[in-house]
Image (cartoon, rainbow, N blue to C red; front, side, top):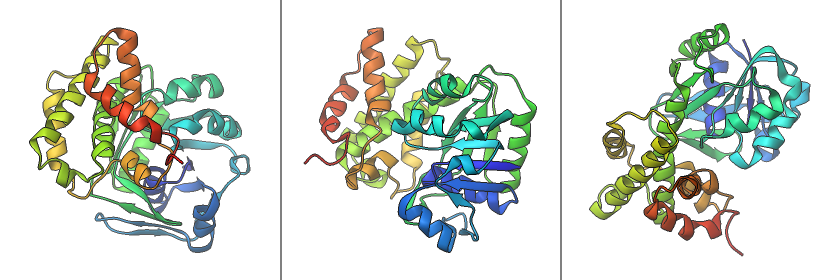
Length: 307
């Protein structure tokens, strides 16, 4: 199976490396020092699941040089969706599956006008991993799962083939006929977690020790769930309880990627996470008081460290 990974950071790098180790023909698209390190020394994933080293590693900064692929894991930051989508048109064949594994809920909708409705599927990545240094991905915790499916709910041959490849790669995978629900389940979790953790700038082990901070998580979950239901998304009745339990079980040193970006002075995905809940709440008339305050407190950092 030919696979291209567009955006070889924590998510794309970790899943791409696992697929390459399992025998898939994987090409990573990256840039800068990360690309040069991958070309020179391969791609290394340091993880409690066991370390992986893909060397030699097929890596490029020119998607057009790859040719058509079977599966394209689309893992760029949310502000790069349109530009990266335009750059990958030559990779798309009649049966290519483009699977966005980004945060947020609208990547597929933004890619369809560029790549067409037949190419794009929906996807959810469940992993905590970041670039530790050029050429090295570091995973926190052991959970590693992809949930994906056709946007219209049908079960396709390309979906089954990729599911089989993921199973061979040794991480959890689920091919679903309800991808919108899966997208929103992750979105609610991440919109709340990234907002609270970035505001307080501590890992989950510290955050969950304080009852007032846990109340922030609970209120943020409730607001995001209410927005999703107002949009007509079928969210399970026990969703908030399950998300609150998830926070209690995260690895103590784990931080959302947005909190890591904030610490590094990088651009934030805030407008597509907590900010997206706030914007949708305004459109739908659903109150989001807690996430609105957190969004206001963080938005001056959204384009990187204020000068």
